[in-house]
Amino acid sequence: NKDRMQTAWEEARYSTDKTVIPFSKQKEDKGSLFNYYKKLIQYRNSNSALTYGDIDHAGIETDELVSFVRKHDNNECLVLHNVSDVEITLTITDRIDRFNEIDFDSEDGKIAIRDGELKLPAYSTVVLKHD
Image 1: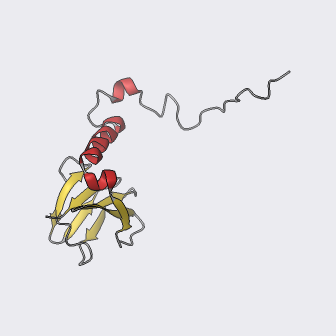
Image 2: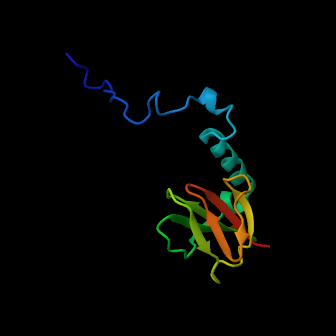
């Protein structure tokens, strides 16, 4: 006689001991996913546009890139996520050229705007602001 209200657990396929690094190890590793999200959340909480701002389309049409503009009062930023497994080069066009300063990047300062272009490594994030 099986209780119909009891939860039936499925066998884990993706989150297993072989595929997931335990939290106890991640919290000590500066390059871990846990510490990346911790850093990203701290940054978001310090930026009023990211915390409270409206979200608008950035006008960048690239399949590998998720992009949007956040604005709150006088604080405005452009968020770029390279969600692909390849580096992409974004040409800074008139529509977004006001965003001329990198305020955050997931690569510890290795991303730069050079000659009107921004190279985003695979699976990276950058937040641009303007002065």
